[in-house]
Image: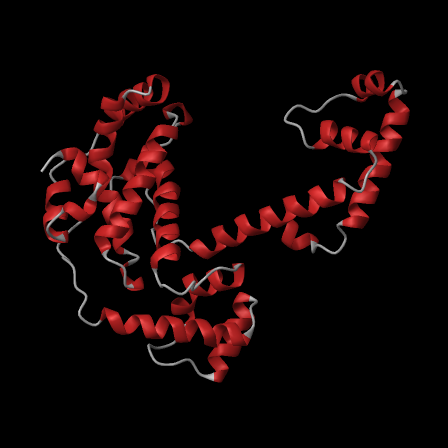
Length: 290
């Protein structure tokens, strides 16, 4: 079995135990060795260095992926998705940040696993909205037992997650039906993922719903802002763009020269435009936008 097949195509492994046994043979990297490899991978796009970074970190991916076994998807498939996230992280990891690779890679690994679950958990689209995703990843945590949810529990969960009671019942039904497929599902409990003090590894059970909710909300805000900006005149749009939405803030003097106006007049237009934008976006709760 080639090393490349281990992280690029987990479904070729005969069993989960065999896979876990194989990846556990790759020793962890020292911080100095990791930095040296990461520098070459980041600055030179060295494929050999990327490969050398992947293998010791496969055990972390497996450890994270097994935390999502309760959704009824094959763990090897979850691991394969996580391995894709690991490779993406390695290609983006800048060792000059001062963090270990595992700390940086966790987000990428979990995001790929999360997206895989959403795409494949059911033929029916089980979690397509912000509220559904929130319930999908949190309902089991809030349920008091494995049975069907009762009215009091549904109301409490709906209040905690700020969703409709009807949505709680719907998601509980979907999850309960899928859980029936897990009765005969087992995996090797002897696998251990060693964690060193300097790895800064965090709990893989970290709530995914919050990240998805924030992403969805940010997209919503961007769209609302785009719509509001279109209601400004072209000069006001240009001033707001260069004063508030650019990486480098343009000075009032420079904008004055561009529009052949005084700096004070540009400032007045800027204030008026911001006031109008605030009015146009006044329906958005400020606490949620913060």
